[in-house]
Amino acid sequence: MKNINKQQEIIRFDRVGLCYTKNTPICFDLDFSFFAGGFYFLTGPSGVGKTSLLKLIYKEVLPTSGTVRVFGKDLSKLTAQELPHFRQKLGLVFQDCRLLDHLNTLDNVALPMKIAGSDIKKARIYAKELLHWVGLGQHIDAFPSTLSDGQKQRIGIARAVITRPKLLLADEPTGNVDDISAFKMMNLFEELNKIGTTIVLATHNRQIVSTFPYPELQLYHGQLSYSQQDQYPMNG
Image (cartoon, rainbow, N blue to C red; front, side):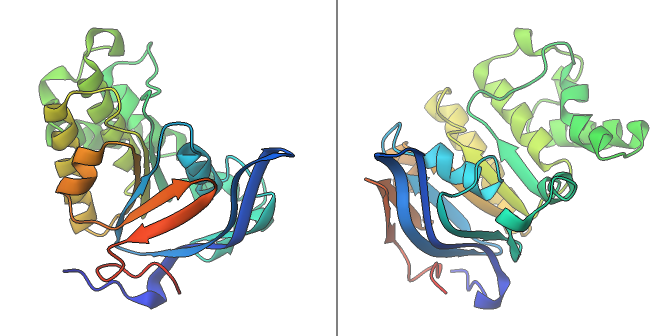
């Protein structure tokens, strides 16, 4: 059982609310913390606002009220110039993968390092290592259109971690794949977590949540409820 040090707070929501329209709040008065090295499930029915909650964490949207802090930084005070550096500390895995169709597998995975200014040769070497890690070393020259949904999702995971992020946000990563592929992905996430990456995984897959012993935050009617708080503290 992990003992997460409360001094290593990585995400903090202080009375956070989000509304896209006046009378339809996505969430309100959310008050919680996540800590470095933790693995957290974010659950709830489809359309309840899990994706919006993740968007608040990587500053795709700003809260209507309250404060979101990530790595100790108030995101409302993060400038446009600071945003790219902030996001380099994050890994993002999307349900739709968002691979670039005109790039092969190797270059899709290497892309974040190239954008960050790394040497192209070095980026491709590391991308190749990651593709072997996710079990796709034999597909380095393949293009997205030739791959299955499960293969695309594993490529998305490799791309998300190539910059060695401190925090990984995964939005329904198992939503479009079969159970075997879903559990393979969970094993990859667990390996990342064991080397220190904090993981927040949004899902409505109850089988996965019940199989893996990580704390669960359930989003429903704009509020969060917790489970397994004895294993991972979530409130400061």
